[in-house]
Image (cartoon, rainbow, N blue to C red; front, side, top):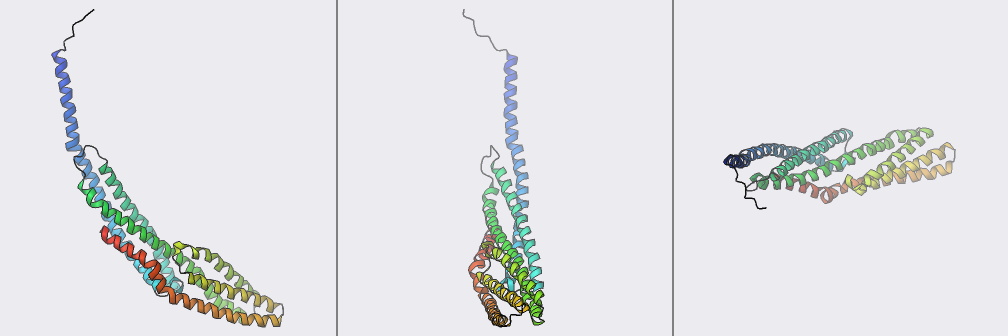
Length: 291
């Protein structure tokens, strides 16, 4: 059975119109008032993190320059104890500072991502176009800084052990041998060998950025300590002829140790130029681009 369409009351039409107008007004207010305010807040946070990241990256770069400036002359394993301890503390602090700086840079990138993700923007935010390239450069700069600081920390930690072993070898071990204290000499020689062998694994790690010539020096010291241990045991046993042969072998091993150290020191500038300087150049180039 056919029924005529029901007429909509004017009150309903007016109510629907008001609801539509309110919805349009809410959307307009959101686009005109709320979004710009939200973008402004995020932009301020991003600018603050970028500013902090730039300054922190510059500070890290200065610390890295100090570290590798000390190492460049004759290598980290040639540093005296006071400078070695000071530089190790600096390298550890620089690593932490670089990680903190990277955190600020990544926070700024996160704010930019939030800005870009805001809907209903009529055009991309200008801050994204200007700051995103700078942040990418700073991130690359900090990547190089972290690599250099970590390498310095590894090198200087190895150097602490190896320098102590070298001092023991030249001092207490030699004194015990001269005093015919075979038991003490044998124990010290064994301890030196054990510690040096333990240091060879981190020394060979590419992240340590350590010239293999220093591993050759460590091998030479291990050879000397091994011969000194055999000499002590043979002398304690009263085997005079074998002890004399080992004494000559000790002298030859000592000469090899000195030659290996001299070669490592002489090769330090070339190693620095070949392995470290490219990373330093990257750090500086990216920092300049990000600033």
